Length: 364
Image (tube, rainbow, N blue to C red; front, side, top):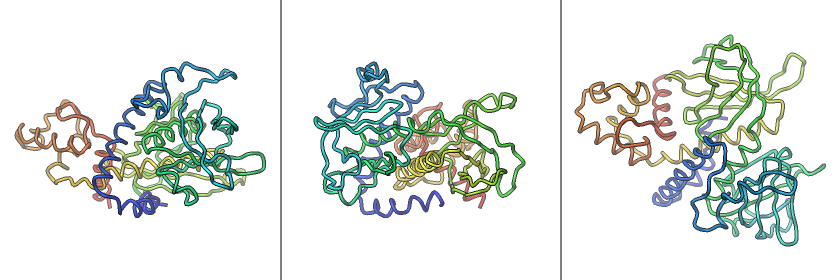
């Protein structure tokens, strides 16, 4: 599957939405993902900015509160949901709680316990037809219950569900063990790179593979910038023991070149969830820039920021005056493509996405 192909179905549905609706959703997501980025950096869940406690994914109280089992509760909010594949598809209102070990859906009468290790699928934003009259936005969670596969649907406002989904992806995948071959290819050239056993950690902007071989020369853990992903597919291969294994092949832009990284995990369910995560973030980033038109002069600034060090005089490099550079930076900041109007600035994931698409067009 290409990143573009995996996004096509969602894109067709979104095409009928108005520009103002898209802009509002993109702005809300930008604020949401900034909060998520801060949470990832601090290693703890920050307090939600929502005025309503019922819409808070986590709060300062829930961060310090522990369940009777001693587990820290990292998610606690009120939502409507259909728990455990209820054939009647009648949503009920209750509390959604999550620790690092389990997801709990509780009402006054029932409690559904879902071990994190039993989750095999997380689908965000796909509202099942059976419940579309009740929910505007949902996350479907597929899990194994004994000999059965069940599905839970949790619905709410877009910002709430997206933030919860990101935390659920992290709880499911962070700390996993992966086998990574990087680079497997540079352009079309196959490289003789070793496959290394690593950890795996999700951030919004990247997937990081820490704890690489201690003898490796790299000081920093290798990571894939998700704004640079241009293609990915799951390949089935046979390993040295004759067993069938799934390999996630990810093409991304690195230093202006198309690089392929291959990732595998012993758990097929985690491979499926990691693929879901890549498709989701790709769709979010692409949808945020769908209506953004970047002039050639502004694209030059983006490429300059991407390719040069912070102490480079960008105005001199582009042979333009300071006033012209300020005007271009202001325009790029208004489109959420850079982090600030004045240097030093960084490209946002949306800005890097546009630059990487430009590099890919050049490489092709």
